[in-house]
Image (cartoon, rainbow over all chains, first blue to last red; front, side, top):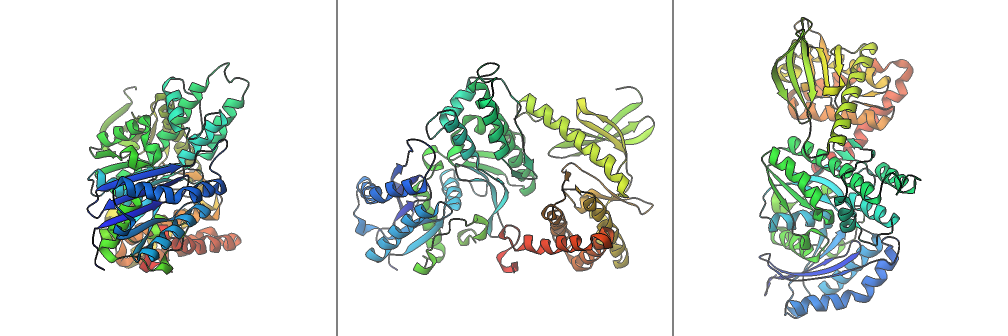
Length: 337
Length: 224
């Protein structure tokens, strides 16, 4: 295949965000346009998100092309998120990507969303071989590259950290996304109320923590003996101490000399501070992925597609089935071996 | 601390705790102290170190009743998150296993298998079974140490996971005689689990293979 312009269009479509990034093979991001579903009430309902993405997808693609000042005919490669995520939403990305690939007669690459988070972080932070703490609304994973794969050393056994914070926020009437607001609330308090701390080896469990925090705000003592600020602070302190403990344990276990923090929850300053603390103690480098690229975005999908394409080429159409439950440690990483 | 308690020197620094050598009322002793972590607030830090110290000490005290050799606990100082226990003189099995004769290897691995079965049969999960956590004394007694990740469980899954971790350790650290060692270990384990709980034991051993087929633990080439 003779690529004329070395341009990749990446589509992110795993959850609430439909995002399109146009990235050069060198890694230069020409444009990135996001369309995020914001529920009026409740959480991310897959069917409602699907409706929004279906109505807007072409508009977002066109905006990304306009921002990059290119026409769709100049695109050489399509990359899309095939896993993991919500089935109905993954399907839209897969369908649109296959259609564009066949219509334009260009190769297609199916990308695992979690790996894309790590790869964009490695590239932008110029970090070679990090231990990654990936924290978002859909994932909580401690991972590092070993024997050909991004191995998972620790992960949540139930709900992801972002889900914990968002669900708590929703219960106290904070609209989605609740993370930044909960962080602001927590900053106003130094009071700690005991909450369950559950770490098993390098795995974590947040569901008991969520129930306990919920009980606190439903209790008759709420706004009497303690405030929302105190509960938010206690929730963050407990959850982030758990994350930091498993990250430190994984750091000792893997012997890596860099830590990468990514995913939507990476924006939280208190979490950054804690991870930074252990990185100083162990004298390892610490990087946070820039917020624009830490959350779900099409540029990371495009960049990971480029890495795979440059090393072993694109996927056959038959390999572009979505896989809502795929684990990233099931996938070999040809561009690193 | 009184004159009867002397902490002489740091002998090991782990991620969670430091081990000191010293003496306790004239007896050689190990002081295992959980160190404060500056990244978390004091309330959480204190509670974790307090609870984990207490849990580990309780585990050590309980499992000795099942015929498992563990260091006797002299004192629990929860305020300082420290367990004082008998100093077990000897060598880490990790350092000497590869230099032993095959018949000795088989003998010790069977013994370890039995001890772990005694733990599991009574609802104790060690959590970190490695050859670094086993000490062979000059009198050829095998002690199991470090109950820092100990947990209580009767589930097949937890027991198999415990065994699976040990299998991985044998493979990675003592690969040359892995098959002989692991077979001897399993034999000892089945024997220790006993005839009356034979079917439970079989389920646990079978489940190790199930755990291995999950992508998390094996290279694709090695997967079933």
